[in-house]
Length: 135
Image 1 (cartoon, rainbow, N blue to C red):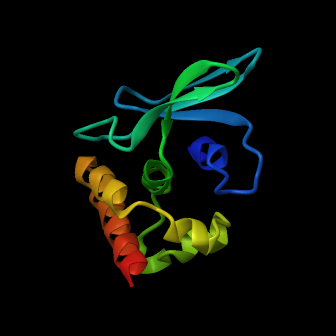
Image 2 (image 1 turned 90 degrees about the vertical axis):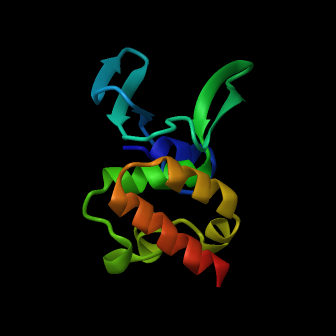
């Protein structure tokens, strides 16, 4: 669902056939002649934490989640995933994100994103990931 930003950053090898966005409004999905678009509600005190404006497709601009925010949004949408049960293996085995890509994540951005979110399970996962990355 929120894999489009992970794909944009080259973190996952699979093609993504839906442009997925997070929103602080209600979740919605649209199918149009140019593709499928989904908006998933992720409660956050600062909805733009870990999001940046980037040039895409020959000069257009779009707000795109940083790799750190994309991981947080992914964890939020996968309700069954917890740090205690899945750990980093969810990212490296299930999502096929390379370990060196995880090691390249910004701890500052992970902290910023974690501080902005209101979901305890997602924050706990990010804190576990931070501890593992600092080892």
